[in-house]
Image 1 (cartoon, rainbow, N blue to C red):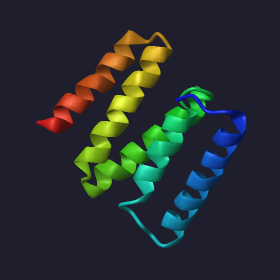
Image 2: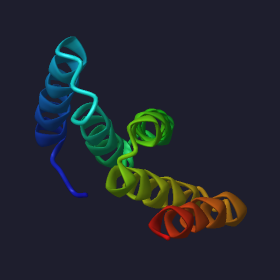
Image 3: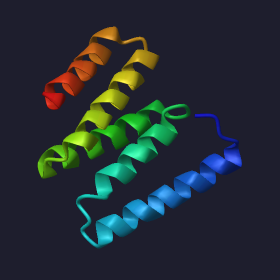
Image 4: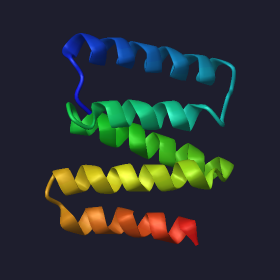
Length: 102
């Protein structure tokens, strides 16, 4: 994702507001998607933030049975570990995509 710093900050603020609203109104369906998008936005800038967002989204997606979001989380976690040159963890997460997809 290639964003100018100002665009990144605006996008992050919007997603954080959306996540806060989803949390406030107990929107368990929307919350993991906003976390997933925050993670994707952070992927190119702050790996630790991306990891935290992806894992939080995965937890909720698994709890509520949202298989689409769950596969997205595993895919993004795989991409994250691939960028960090951790092929073992990347493979584990890509295999998670396959397991959930079955």
